[in-house]
Length: 81
Image 1 (spheres, rainbow, N blue to C red):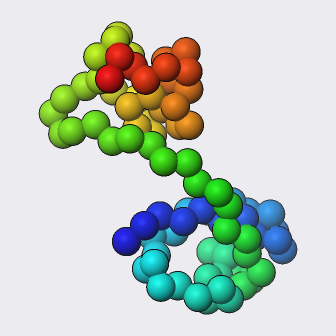
Image 2 (image 1 turned 90 degrees about the vertical axis):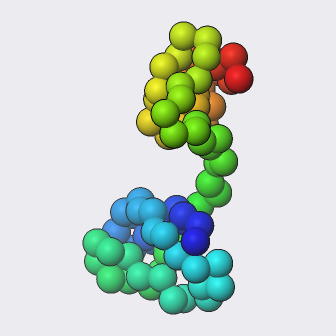
């Protein structure tokens, strides 16, 4: 199941949910206020690093993928991958 990122239009809360790919509009509720008025945000793919290995190039393990969120953890590069 994929992770989806949302913003609640009622309370402006940002949240992420693990949901079925078959989820229909209007089925998702904000965990903060319970509103079904949520907008799915554009998510960015983050490459994963194999278990037990670390990216090369001096970056080290970074949360959010090999180069951190949105690929910017190592001067915008790919950590030498």
